[in-house]
Image (tube, rainbow, N blue to C red):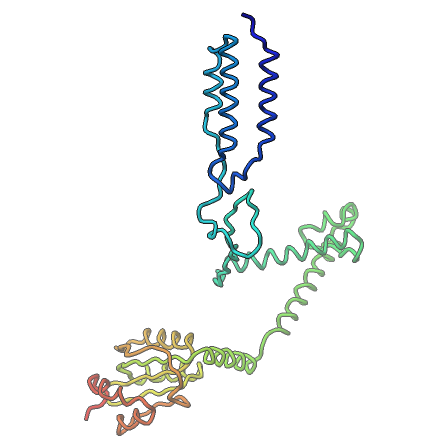
Length: 322
């Protein structure tokens, strides 16, 4: 029996129109679509019955196998609340995990000498490039080339061949003028002794305002070591005292953290034996100035400066021989 292909296609088309008329549910709101599944089953039954009547049962299993494959229905995530960061309506077509963008942290790392020189070089090159652009656009007049004994022939051109001595003297004169100008500028920026002293004092006061640190060292200080410690303490504008007796001494320094490191470095270079008692931060300073003492009563001296607890420790270190 011949297969009526036109009738079969007409039946399929009619059934598809019936399926299109069936109201579809939102696949994002339900995990199953019973209406769509039942309609497909009806389509398969109708196609199979017609195929059996027309003798095309051999082809229907392949068609049924294709139609029976499980359909992929996209579903929203199970925990929708984890993706909600506001009260706004969420589009059910696309689900995105909204993660806040954190700014890149800026590390305040000091530059090395090599990096600092490179940054300075790049800054100068950028300024020169801006000047060249302004000269090319005619905003400013083009600067005259700097004459040197090496480039004088290239800059002057053919006239240099006629009078080479003249242009070499001219180049040497311009080089001398530029060198004198730079020396004058450097001398104008150079600070006097009083200005350097004030600058150093202001820097030390700024370090002290950031935090007062204390350094306590026991040492066997001879006259040479005493002089070195005294000059270092005065140059750094520290407060504290150096308590001495016949054999040893107690050094107490109160200043900013950078100056504490400098004093400790100075003491470590001395030939005398020393021992670090304590190094830390203070809330308030205990001394108003720097001085060297040979107290008759070390205990009373330390108690007057709120350091009485150090007396017994220093007595074990032979600061007090009584």
